Amino acid sequence: MASAHSRMRCGEFRTTYQADMTIFPTPLARRTAVGSVLLLLAAPAVLDSYLLNLLIQIGYYGIAALGLNIVVGFTGQISLGHAAFFGFGAFASAWLNGTTGIPVFFTIPLAGAMTMAVGLIVGIPAGRIKGLYLAIATLASQYILEDFFARAEWFTGGSAGAMANPFTLFGYEFFTDQTYFYVVLFYVVVMYLGGANLMRTRDGRAFVAVRDHYLSAEIMGINLTKYRILSFGISSFYAGVGGALFGHYLGFVSAEGFTLLLSIQFIGMVIIGGLGSVMGAMMGTVFMVLLPEVMEFGVHLVGSNNTALTQALAYIKEMAIGLAIILFLIFEPDGLAHRWRMIKNYWKLYPFSY
Amino acid sequence: MTDQTPILQVEDIFLSFGGVHALREVSFAVRPGELFSIIGPNGAGKTSMLNCISGRYQPNKGSIAFKGQKIIGMKPNARCNLGIGRTFQNLALFNHMTVLDNIMVGRHHLMKNNFLTGPFYWFSGARKEELRHRREVEDIIDFLEISHIRKEVAGTLSYGLRKRVELARAVALRPDLILLDEPMAGMNLEEKEDMARYIIDLNEEWGMTVIMIEHDMGVVMDISHRVMVLDFGRKIAEGLPEDVMANEQVKTAYLGVGIDNDDEPETELSAEVG
Image (cartoon, rainbow over all chains, first blue to last red):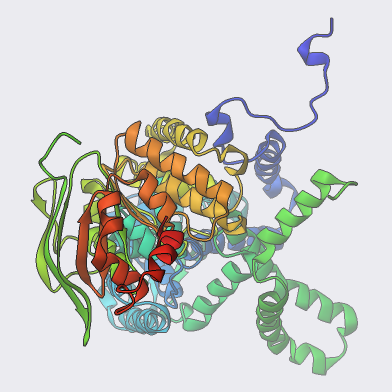
């Protein structure tokens, strides 16, 4: 008699509810995720500074993009002030570390918490208004915070900017790209696991319920005002942590870096990646960070001695971002995450796709 | 039904939208364990009445007491915590969530994990709690026979199934009083029979008090304990199904003024009502 093990499994079968509630739908998906993190651990040893710099950018922008996806994608509210929260996190961490001497390791989550407090205040209008009106209210918060960065010299150093000390742990400085990469990777893994967990538990479901049908969400016992504002708070926490990582990476935070354009780019990331998808936020960030680099590479490939083309490079980069957002809105409004699911489903049933 | 203290006491409800009087001086009481139906022609104010109870509308005058507690002025989510659940006439599912998640949302007010403990799923006890509620939800899924679609996205389901998922979500709230707004609208005979069975089971085995709005008179007369009839925002009759059916005013409401003196409409009425 053949033992159970000798029979080939013809599918993924779960026998407990616990196995049915995992973050990764299949063991293969989990192994792939763990494998890619392990692979990334080896990245500083093999990649040059240029590529590492791109990966670090993807890391801190990715954390902030997940935050924006929580408010825009999961809760269905618009926020045009995400860059300002990102900036606030950067200043807050530099300021905390500079004035109190708390190690950077702790000031990063503390900066997240401070940004969350600001986000909760800014989110108060969201308890009452929706759609275009909320867009304008968040736009106002973007400009108010930008103005605050320029004027609050005690906090941001005003127009001169603020110095941010390098990340230290047990006296060891993570100063180079090679070492700082691990810091960012750690935060990305923690924040993304946290985000995925949040979205499969009570409050995450409440966010989606508020987005999908707020009237029936309220009948289901969900306090609309609380969750609409809380969504802004959590989103700002992510932005703050991302911003703090950004600040300590550059070592210098300037008040001019957190404009509306960056807010729009964050929105681009979540639209391209996929609204309402945790991994989508990361995919969109990768796309948005790499797109200008690919454009640059392409321009150099076509004609590095064509001065007209190289001079237009800055415009080409900007236009490519705009074009990408438009093309995604038309052809793949559900984003890269959706496309990825389609590809997986296709191969799951290949070659019998019915 | 022997318990005579009402679980829901509605007194002199008056609701108007501008010049339109949706409800006028409506009073009724529902006893614990009762299956109470509200019927009436279109625009009679039935759904408005449910909306007043569940909290979507605040009536202009009158009082509503649930388990002896005044609930006028309370928000819908607070009423849900007290034990009032409902379904909607026009589907109100969370269309992008799976059926399972939809029903899990119904457990919201019974769960404790939040944005601080949720992210630490494995360490904070959130997993344990989610599992416990998942088991409860699976009981409901079994009871309503929707286990084959539990991973489907709600927005992709057929109308009849969505209605059933909506019922499952309301049951997941574990309400003491469940308000069903036309649970059988748009269903075929077989689906209606299933739905009637579920409603009777909810009432008899799960011990829920039911207030139901339904246009299918056959179902209403068969399964209701008591029936209330609304017409133009006024209560025109209340009582046992057979008494209500024999009521002259009810016949007038359904067939129009002046016809009830003829002999002919009697048969028409029984065709429509019976």
